[in-house]
Image (tube, rainbow, N blue to C red; front, side, top):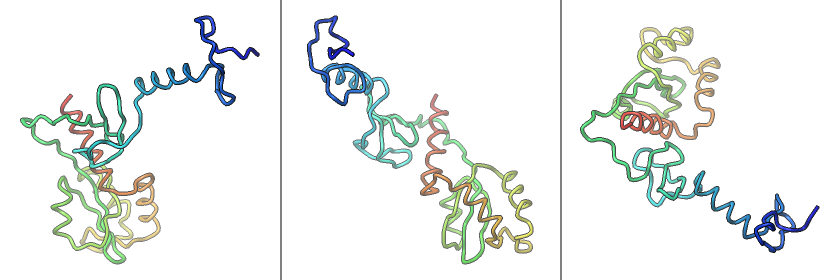
Length: 185
């Protein structure tokens, strides 16, 4: 195997680093890294928090920044003439040893009216999804309410909804930003 940079035909005589993944000198490896960063972006902290989801993690491109969580272009503004998109969610609120399964398009306002200890999860869906969950967990239901015993079957369902989700609110913000982005397109 030759010790010459693969760009030797172009006159390169630079030494190849011992740990180089391909036979290129440091200068040519650097040029490839810069090209890749321009093409695919560089993950970095955003200069300001994302206005849509609040994340600080971004991807820097030569053309600007994009939120790494919700993919909102930093600096873009939603069309103020368009009504905000409706995002219906099924929510799971815990209070003591019970869980309320309900639906809303405005969770912050709704939760302010419900005594609870913890938001366990969100699931995208409207009253049809909520009705399916009420039927699915009917054996755990407190009669004539939307409250359920926090039994194993319900706990497993909520655990599935929480996979990869550290904070249900961040997931809700991402869904909302996706709808805003689709609306603006």
